[in-house]
Length: 174
Image 1 (tube, rainbow, N blue to C red):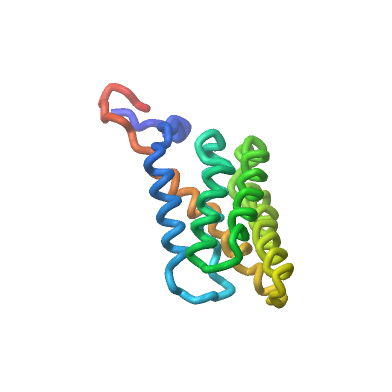
Image 2 (cartoon, helix red, strand yellow):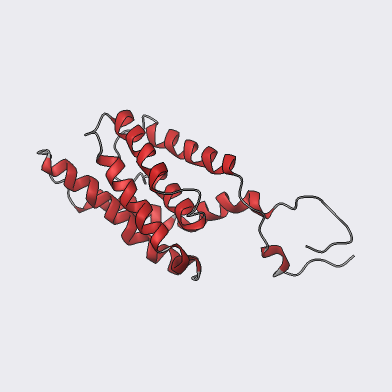
């Protein structure tokens, strides 16, 4: 029996809309867990939202980002619209640059994602500072740097269901 070549394994099944929703819900729930406001915790929802906006720009976009941002604002008890604005701008940037980002390997993809995640955190910080909050220092952006480092492992995890074959056929190598 011939083993399929590496190039034939890279053919992906279409992503299920249910899986996209499930992954966004899981990221939302992880963000809303009472872990405290540690500076090193990445914004999981922003990371997963950016991933799906890059991979599936026709299914996940600014409307999804706005709705999830409002839920985050409500869950955190923060200024209403703070996360919504940041996530909408993140989704816009991710869908705009999605074709460009997908041409690159994982390292260069993460280098493209870094300014988008830092930009989303900057928008949230500016909204807070307009509402008379103090500047937390540059350590505030550590979560975006950690999220950028997690881009590749999270991407592999989110792509796993697409690598499954629909049905096993011994006569078909793909």
